[in-house]
Length: 182
Image 1 (cartoon, helix red, strand yellow):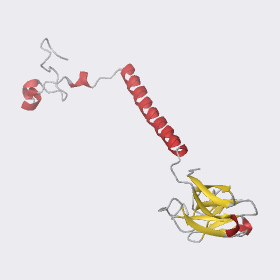
Image 2 (cartoon, one colour):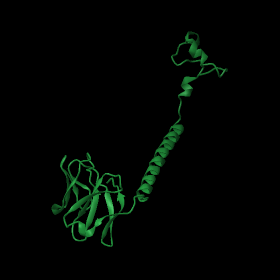
Image 3 (cartoon, rainbow, N blue to C red):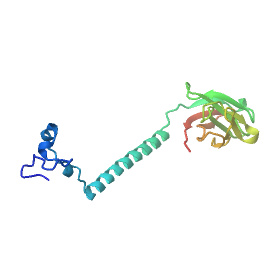
Image 4 (spheres, one colour):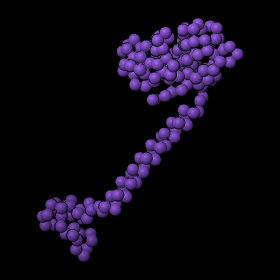
C-alpha cells in the first residue's frame, strides 16, 4: 500500500493516481485500507469488553436498587387506633407527611392493609371493595388484589405501593413503604 516513505499514500481509496487527488488528501496522508482493517481477535476483544461493560453497569444498577429498597428512611408514625377503623372500612392518610394519599383498609378483625391510593396506570384514586377482595380504579376499570396490591384486570401493569404496617398497643403504625415492580 505504501512505498518506503510511510507518510505517503501510494494507493488512494478512490483508485486514482496521487497526482489527480485533491490537495486535502495529499495534506493528510492516511493509508485508509490499512486503517480500516480489523482482525477477528480485535473484534472479539472489543465485543467482549463492551458486553462486560454493559453487564457491569446493569449489575451495579440492580445492586443499587436493592440496596435503596432495603434502606428505609420513612418515619414510624401512628396512623389510627385499631378501634377507629370498622371491619370492611377504610380511611385515607398521608405517609410520609407530604406524600400522595394512602389508603388503610381493615379486611377482618386482625388484618389491615395499606396501599398508595393512586392507580399505577394513570394515578386515579382506587376504591376498596372489601366484600369481593378488590381495589377498583374507576377511570379505566383497573382492578387490584386487596391482599397484595397486584393488578388483576385492566390496564395497570404494576402493583400498588404497599405501606408496611404493625399493630402496637392498639395503634396501627406505618413503618415503611414497599415499592414493587412485579
